[in-house]
Amino acid sequence: MMADEKKILRLLKTARGQMDGIIRMVEENRYCIDISQQLMATEAILNRANKEILSAHLKHCVQEAASEEERSQKIDEFVTTLGHILK
Image 1 (spheres, rainbow, N blue to C red):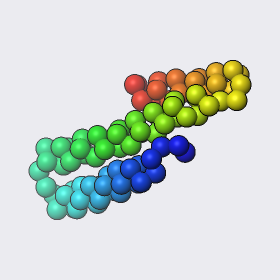
Image 2: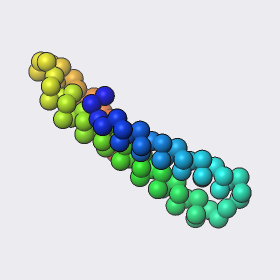
Image 3: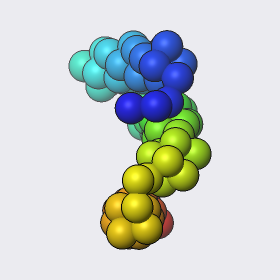
Image 4: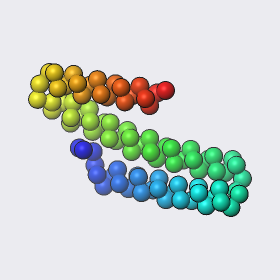
């Protein structure tokens, strides 16, 4: 992985901490809208991490592919992943 590992880990650990908080909120029977807002905040952090990883994929893995065939394969993988994100 060519993305900034420290940045990705920080984002993922933040999301993990938020998930722990959301679990506590559910266990404490907190207000539904408050739980939903925390879920959306966690999704936003995970989306930022994914954006960083996919950006690094384009900037490094695709750009530095050894052959046109390999580059095409990596682009196809990216497009497939993007299709899953945009569902």
